[in-house]
Length: 361
Image 1: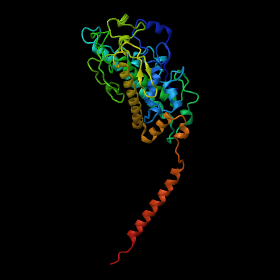
Image 2: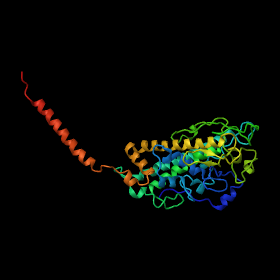
Image 3: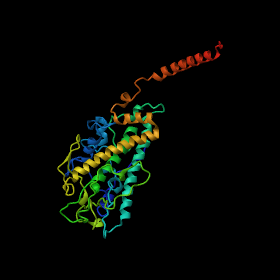
Image 4: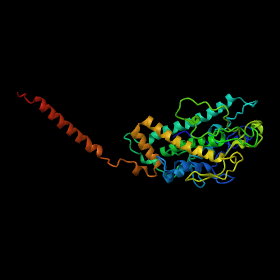
C-alpha cells in the first residue's frame, strides 16, 4: 500500500491561527467567493477540449480536476496538506530594505516548496510502474476508474489513481505559485511599494523556478516573493506575519475562469484587480500545468522506455484503457517472428549457394 497523507487534527488548525500556515489558494470549492479555480485551470490546461497532446478524457479528468463536491486529485492538498506551506508555495516572502526576515530564509522556503513538489512528482513516477505488466500490457485492475478514485481513501491502491493523485498534487502547488507569488503580476502603480504593495515581476509561465526535472534549484529574482499566511490573514499582517508581505496583500485566488478556454474574468481579490493580474496568474498557471504534464511524460519515458511509457500515458489519460491501449494486433509478434526467421534462412541459403558455385572462365 502506498504512503498516505492524513487529515490534519483540529488542534493543529487552531495552532495555525498564530503560526504560518498555507493559504486557501486558488479555489477548490464553489462558495465563499471561490469558484473551483483549481478545477477550472486544470480542465482548461489538460482536457481534450483544449486540444493538448495526451489530453484527459472526461471521467479521468473528473478525478484529476474534481467535480461537484469532489475535490479530485488537484484539490487533495486542500484536504490533507492544509498546514504544509510547502504544498502551496507559501511563506517565501521577502522585501528589500529592513525586512523582518532575510532573503536566504525566503529562498529556503521556496526551495522547500519545489522539493515538496518534486517528491510528489517522483512518487507519481514510482506508482506508474504498476500500470502495465512485464509484457508492457495494461493491467485492468490497476487502471479502472469505476468506482471513482478517492485521494482521501487510505485503502486506495489502484496505480492509475495513485499516479494521478501525485500529478494532481504537483498541479495544485504550481498553480498556487502563480496565485501566491508576484511572478506574474504587477504592483498597484497608484501606491508606494511596501509590504502591503510588493513589487511585481510580470513574467510569463512556465517558470524556471518550477523545473522539477532539474537536479538543482534555480535562483529566484531579487524581488521575488510569496505571501506569509496565518488564519487571521489580513493587511497589515498579524501575528508572525506582522510587517511582512501577506497572502491577503498578494494573492490572486478568486475570480471566474472558463474551463474550456481558460478566459479569466471578474477578479475577486485586491491584488487580482490590479491591471491584468488575475488574467496573468491564470495564464501562467495554465501554461505551467501543461509544462508539468509534458515533463511527467518525459520522465516516464526516461525511466521506463519509450514503448512502456507510451502505454502508461495511454492508460492515464483514457477512460477505458484496457480496450483503448491494448495491442490492436495481439498475435502480430507470433506471426512476424517465424516469417522473419524463414526469410532470413532463405536469404542465407541463397548466399551460401552463390559462394559455393564453381568459378567458370
